[in-house]
Amino acid sequence: MAASGFALAWAVGGMFTASAMAPWVMGLAYNVPPVRLKGWPYLDVLSESINNPIRLALGWLAYYFKMGLQPGSAAQRPEALHRERGFMVCLVVCLVGFVVLTFTSIPVLCE
Image (tube, one colour):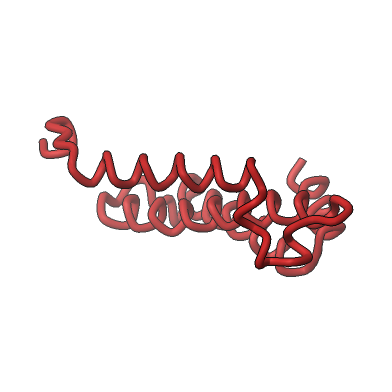
């Protein structure tokens, strides 16, 4: 299954393939002995904090690639990105989530 995912990622490009392989490698390091980072509290958190930006980058790359393939796309003229409704909705949702969570106390996280 990983090989088919890497083959599809290769169709997008080399950088996308490298980005797609990184979570797979991190997953092996996280779950498979002898390394199994899951068993070491600080390394567990550190490995997950490395994985999350990689997943975010893959999502943005995929969305931007999809947007770039459309005729007359704003990805081909970046000065018009503010006219892409889906892109702006995603941006606003992320921004609002960030601001709300920045000022919200979540007691479970403090335990």
